Image 1 (cartoon, rainbow, N blue to C red):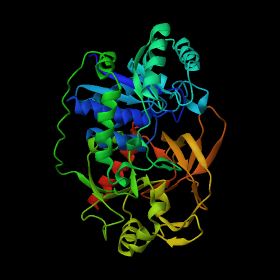
Image 2 (cartoon, rainbow, N blue to C red; image 1 turned 180 degrees about the horizontal axis):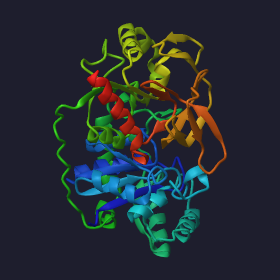
Image 3 (tube, rainbow, N blue to C red; image 1 turned 120 degrees about the vertical axis):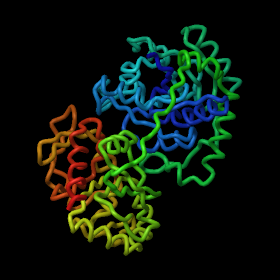
Image 4 (cartoon, rainbow, N blue to C red; image 1 turned 60 degrees about the vertical axis):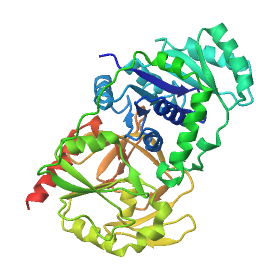
Length: 443
């Protein structure tokens, strides 16, 4: 089956890929199209903005996490509607360690045979962009780059420049995008603010989509994606006699891969959302707990003040409730989290120790994790906080490197540490958790 798809990529980070991608998704919806979307790489935040634009979850595809066959399988499983828009990561050819093609936007485009449209940061630039684009075309072994968009420059000048580049390089000029305050989201140390933290996000995306539709040749963009293929989203089966697992979902805990959630559900779990910020205790009749990453450091006072929730979690985990906790969820289980000013806040007292702000990235990038049972799974780290007790029960290794270190608390039914894990990279890992949940539920 030939899927309609298009990758929005760039020459480097900061070129405006996310803003342009979200604007294009909004414009497509305004045209009556029904797009789905994917993010290349392990980023959690960009897919949240995709979802606000199109109303359905966005997936994460990563050729470092999964081999080509598994990557294509995930894409085909999650494809729905009339076409797929894929947002790239970093520069088009930047992969693992910045020096490998594995894990790059280009690697994913090659895997999926996806046409590429380059978002070119044209601010303060002119005909010199011709040389840059020509270099990217020369490096394109599979001839996937089909078009380009000029970003952050006046439209009149952009049209003049874009038409000349198209004529000389035989690559489709899709249009120019001027600076757009509706997509000028505030920066934060971990990329962008999350979509749920912007009160008028829906209205801003709608306005941005309208402007994007006026700025770009959307019909030409659609033609690059190939014949439109309408695929219905699969109907999710109703939960029936499934093991109930509580999953933290609110402004503080919101980093979850769509692929992880769906794999756990396929393995027999019913995931029950709750809020460590708003609820006073865990949901009833649960056999497991998942505490994902997010921004708990931005809600330390509120989270720490919810004593009934902290006590309920401690009591249930002490009694053996199976638990997976990643990054922010891991810190939440500790005795204390300290804010940037050195103020300490009391937390769950499940894992001894304190988490504190370090002011710079502590560990960043892909990791391979091997647990006590020899199960290996791939993941990613990106955090400015660190703790005085990161655990020593698993071994983490960096790809393309001889660097390794001990990490993670794996004891009894608890698995907690900084790495964000991508379950499809080794389904044996989530299966082991599901089995512990099933056993616990029968006790």
